[in-house]
Length: 83
Image (cartoon, rainbow, N blue to C red; front, top):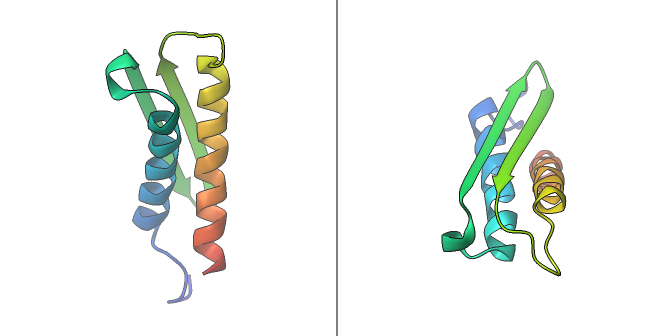
C-alpha cells in the first residue's frame, strides 16, 4: 500500500458514515427501529452489509433504502480513493 492510499480504518469509517448518512437523510432517527451497517475492507475488497428495520411508507421502502445505503458506502469509498 502506498502512502497516498487511505488506511483500512479510513475506508471502513468512510463507508459506514456514508451508509448511515443516507439512511438518516431519508428516515427520522426515531422512526428507525433497528439499523446495522457492517463494513469490512480486507485485501482491497470492500464488503458492505446494511440491515434496516424501519416502517414502509408510500414513498420509502426499507429494503430499497438499505440497498441505496450500501451503494452510497461504495461510492464514498470510490471517492476516497480518487482524492
